[in-house]
Every structure is written in C-alpha cells, then in structure tokens.
Image 1: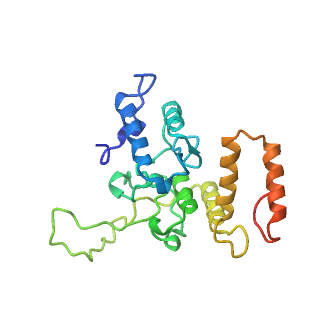
Image 2: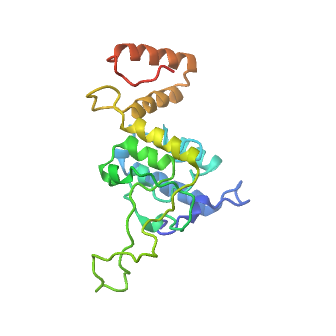
Amino acid sequence: MYKQNRSWMYDKDAVLYGMQSNFLEGVGEFIEFALEHPAYMSGDKIRCPCSKCKNLKFKDPHEVGYDLYAVGFVPNYYNWTSHGEPLDPSVIPQTVGSSRYVPPEMSAWGDRAEMRWDQQMVYDAYGVPSQLNPPQPPNDHPEASTSYQPDADENPTFYQPYVDEGLAERFQDVLKAADQPLYADCEGYSQLSAVTEFMNIKAEYSLPETCMNRVLQSVGGMLPRDHTLPDS
C-alpha cells in the first residue's frame, strides 16, 4: 500500500499530537515489514530508523514505534534498505541538485547486496544511496534497447555532489572505519561494527560511560597489538 508513495513517513500535522492517521498506520506496517526480515534483525530487535537513532541501534519493535511517534523518521529513508528492502529508485526522491554527498568509493563497494551490514549502515546514516544506476529506457517503449545510454546533458545519477566538505570528511572517516578490520586477518568485525556492538550494549543496559571505557580498555588488552578498538 505504501510502496510507491511514502510521503506519509514525514506527514506530521497538528492531528493526533502531530501525527496523521496515515502516519500511525504506516508505522505499524513498517514494523510488520521489518519483522518479516529476520536477517536484518538482532534477535527479536529491529533497527530504529528514528531521527535520533538513525538505524544505528537495535530496539524492541514497540520502542521503535514510540521513537517514530516522538521524533519521526531519519530524513530521506524512503527505501527501507536497513530492514530488508532491496534498493528501489522508485521510492527515492530523484531531484537534481539535492544536497546529497556521493562518495567516490561507491563503485569500490558495489551493490548493496554485496555489502556487509556495517557498510550498509554508513550509507543509511548519511542518507546516501548505495548504488547509483543510470537512467533506464522508458517503460512505454518496450522496443528500446537495454544498452540505452544517457545523453550528455542528462544527469546519470540521482544526486549531485555535496558541497559541504565537513560532512564529506566525516563520511570518509566512517567509511574507513567500516573497511578497517578490528585487527589483522579478523573476518568477523570491522572497527565500526565492533564499536557499534559495544554502543548497543551500553544503550541496552544503560551502562555509564566510565564503565564502558573500562570494558573497552580491558577488551583491547586482550586483542592483538595491532587492534583498532578505541579505548574510550
């Protein structure tokens, strides 16, 4: 029902404490969708796409609902890729000149299906599509060649490069953390996924920062010397 038009996700007027009835219904359908994709869950928890959690935290479904009612969705999360939905350009706003940063590493990582979850998380958190596709032949011309190429004056991507150098640098730093293994030959965790795991534990059990720093230091002492786990 909401596949083609998800404007309801950001439709919050002065009705029902700022939420339209279609927003309430949509949140329910979103949670049902997320629960149908256990590969993208952590046990019985799903990623919270609210504007504060930004798909970085796993929470119980009812907590996700409360967060979405309170602060709404993270901007531009029309395509629920962190919850099992394939990349679908039809639900991504395709406005030329949008302030989205397109990283040069896009082609290096390739399609979302080939990414690890921590790499996917970076793109979702920064609102960057994980695959830039060229325009396709119009559907009303089935005879059009599949080798269609855009004209020189056509924009071959959905987004123009972002001009905010600060955001670009932060994005690059997080990209590097997602690509950097926790230690040499470590296949299970990157620096980013390890830190995210500890942050989820800290949030889930309401651990004080001093306690978490002590845990990080202790775990770091058990890892090989070349590990990349921060101590705070």
